[in-house]
Image (tube, rainbow, N blue to C red; front, side):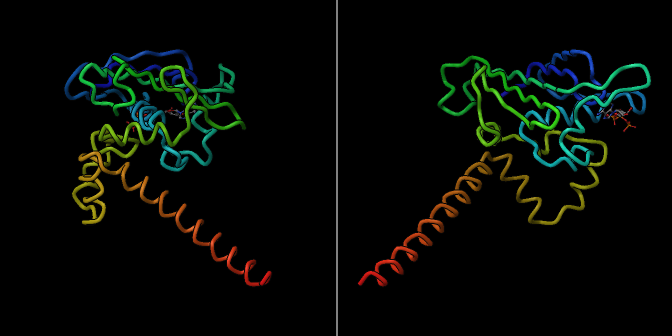
Length: 202
Ligand code: ATP
């Protein structure tokens, strides 16, 4: 699976529409302090469904929207689109007919985020699972920020296992199992309540 293009508009310091081609292989982003290297990496994590504003270095998710400068007004929306080459059919089977995938996340001030996969409205969870099934995601170790290498070296065994699970593409299964367990628990609670009502009726 190969990310081929990243398009940003109104996202953090990338106020104007900006498109980056991502060549196959390892990509490094270099530039002077404050030029937006981390913002680019955050845009990739954000479009993959990152839901922690803190890990986007903000206090709320609206902080990813261009906040304005002394000579440019703030924006009210931000949008990031990631193009993925699916010619090797690495995306889940439901996308086998699609040669490429285009995942878009858009946020409007005080209205939250909306996602699209190839133009179709989708839930955050659909997007997160899509990337998890392709062995990547907002917390993928393939996205290496400046302080990440040190953190990987000193990571606890449990956190290292999570990295291996991401790489093996099974973290989506954990998330589905958690959801199934929640539903099972809710069904058990309903059964208990039903039994109580039946006993009262008897
Ligand atoms: P360094 O090498 O110092 O870590 P960097 O190249 O990684 O820097 P970033 O941290 O990506 O740079 O970008 C920082 C810049 O982005 C700052 O100038 C900051 O003001 C700007 N910025 C962050 N969020 C927003 C926002 N919501 N609106 C406008 N500008 C923003």
